[in-house]
Figure 1: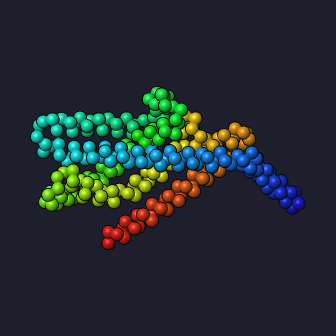
Figure 2: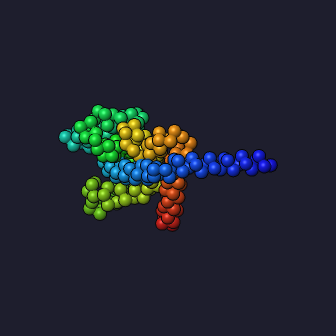
Figure 3: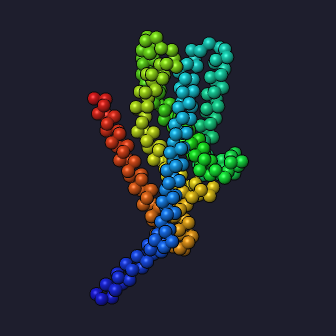
Amino acid sequence: MFLTQLSIGDWWQDLKDTFILNFITDDRYMYLVRGLGVTFSVTAGATALGILLGIIIALIRSTYDKNIRDMRSGIGKIILSALNGIAKFYLTIIRGTPMVVQLMIAYFVVFVSISKYKVFVAILAFGFNSGAYVAEIIRSGIMSIDPGQFEAGRSLGFNYAQTMLYIIIPQAFKNVLPALANEFIVLIKETSVSGYIGLQDLTKGGDVIRSRTFTAFMPLLAVAIIYLVIVMFFTKLVGILERRLRNSER
């Protein structure tokens, strides 16, 4: 019994010493704090860029799907077909290659002239990646709207662009808002590969602590717990949002 209590006491003391070594000594917890700030900065910027790109790509793709058969031959049809081809190429490349490879190409090849601005490059890389998935989410929302809504817009005197802006897109956003929120949650976790370009995000912050203390369990566990808490928090918000949207439809 005494040996058991002694072993538990030694284990608890070792745990405390390891915690102090990893987070308290030399204020090493600040690596996680600063990394968390970088993670949120990249996520917020990439989300904004992804939504902007997603809307543009979704409008091109949905406009093509809805109107290409009824359009007369001419420059308008050619331009729309070309834009749709570019959009499909973008979606194929982005959705068919790993995020970490896209990030490294963006940093070491495409944006090498501004590579010292690592946060900005990361925002561009993650934003372009997210935009492909957001585009398909929004496009599915637009295509799910009853065709009668277009006819209603035309009967009010709206042209195609006005009908999309004032009638279709607001309804589509309402339908896909939970999916967009889930994409934001996924994006938070995807930014964990930012360390491949030397950006000190949350994951890299934990890795820096590990390199200082030569203990991996405590800093990596802390990083995992922080990500878990963030994901659980935003998942809860998405759940609340979905309930409110369902209630508003009654």
